Image (tube, rainbow, N blue to C red; front, side, top):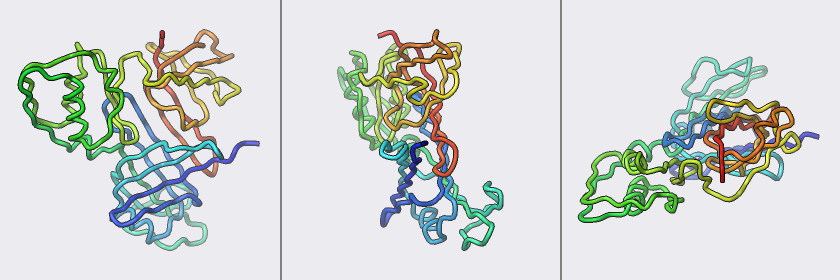
Length: 285
């Protein structure tokens, strides 16, 4: 028997918290180890008018918890970028309406929420500071993260690099790009409210997720020019820059350890499977 699919959407407004779990919900979500904010869209069927308008007017932060039965976890936390509402007979969004109307027989009213991973903080946070004398890259990175207003992880992956009489004025995210660019072999990304630093080819944890036909692998993996692409059932523990150990009967030459560089989620709690499309690069530990 297929395990029960689960999706819960939590919205924090300026006044209270809204939890949505019993309605038909689907979402798509893209994540990458690049510095771009994670992006996605949530569709909720037949959300009542008052709740939908509350999200549209005063929604501030949004979280997605998803998985199967007991194996669920937070997949996304970030910003609400846009809320649109409409009605349809086919399940697709019809003409956009400014408010949700009462559900009529045979008609679905949809609330679509475009989301971005802490988009405002990453794109609008400004940083200006001059450092006299010698400054360590970790000190500058920590100051930039504080300016953005997000937690920080993985400072140990940054190289032992110092700057002399360093000064910067501009977006704090651009500063992170600057100090992790060549010739400094590291990178950063934001995921669920945390700025992660990592080395190219180096996982951020020793945890290895084993993926095979018996543990959720669907179809045959695809070899790319510089990596691999595969689809598996959603596991909330699988996340960016983690290692996977692939065991594929259909593509045995790809078996081994890979480091995740991007994730594409597709989930619906009424039909189809909860899926993750994973792209990963070779890992030689």
